[in-house]
Image (cartoon, rainbow, N blue to C red; front, side):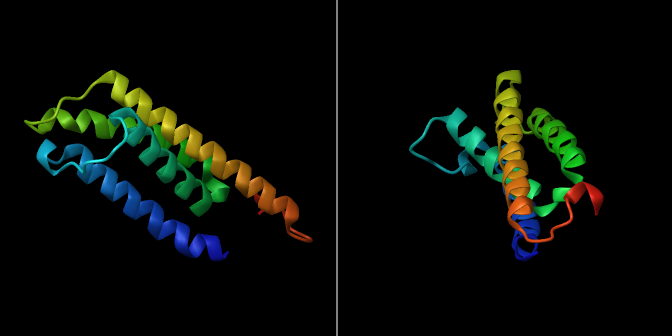
Length: 124
């Protein structure tokens, strides 16, 4: 339960940060030393992992919403004059989210198997 305490606010803060960076003017985008695709995928891996840990019982709904949301957030760039949405970028973001969600699901299953007398998430 300690993970839930930190994962939920972290997941929502990461999503808010991604939304801001995606639709803000290009000049406000943080500078990094990696490629743009690595930045995109990495950010969505982290948010996918955080949401999977935050909502372990609702992982399927979270997966659908986060992957669809990554595409919708990319689409929002149509409303930002200095940004240009691309299908490739949406795909990178969706794949990052899927990888993060998968990692979170695996971690949740591992944690569930290690807990003595644990009731599986599906039965709660």
